[in-house]
Amino acid sequence: MQALADRLADGALAGWPAVLVSAVVISLYALLVFTFFSVTAGVLSWVERRVAARMQSRIGPNRVGPQGFLQWLADGLKTFLKEDLVPDGADALLFRAAPYFVFTGTFLTLVALPFSSHVIAADLNVGLLYVMAITSLVVVGLLMAGWASNNKWSIIGGMRSAAQIVSYEIPAALALLVPVMLAGSLSTQQIIARQGAIDWFVFHDPFTFVSFWIFLISATAEGNRAPFDIPEAESELVSGYNTEYSGMRFLFFFFAEWETYSSSARSPRLHSSADGRSRSFRREAGSTDFSKYWCSFPNRSFGCSC
Image (cartoon, rainbow, N blue to C red):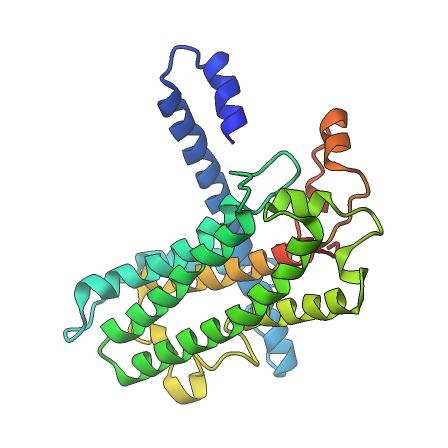
């Protein structure tokens, strides 16, 4: 993004201050990514509900749009218009802030996760370390949500969620050390570029193969979905840490979960890569192949293609 800002500052926006140009570029990039993942989250919610309905011998959403595909738009509008309630006994400040901590912790991972060899917010030389560090905000937000709700179901759900995420982050981080050591870099772009069309890290040796699956399972667990759904546990805790939430604050928790899915889907690419060309060759050829980058970060780390 900085390279784009520099080109604009030297060209179309030549008279603008460099700081303002950078701010505009970053804001537009953030808006585009947020819009993309809002749509992605909606589509994923529809897919999840339809698949779950078939597994449970139900119909699922089928009224709004073909096969109920536009149900996510109706739900989004309904959630946006619902009243934002704060329980009388809740800590109002922490209660209101918690969903944004959770969402921010997942959304900011996109800073270091590439969409292609040319499209990345910041190619940090410690990109992988940044991704693991920024996601710690999720734990803080979930604990805040449970504690501030002043509800026993919420506090139990918050504690369960924090315990689960912390527990699975340890094996996930250790598994990601494997592609880091093989690539000799913490940069997500460099890790992907060090792998070829067949020379994936996931097949480098038995240890990399095992570490890939450890990471994939750990990343799935952080999404709070069955069989790792103890933080919400509808049969035990009503809805867990988000029991007292309504309106858009309630939706932001699920935004974070669906973004976790997306990031988890792109991350494994660190263990694998579908692109047989080197990064320098891609730059010389001017190629920007989004299909080869649009995988979860675990997948890209170990080299698996989508």
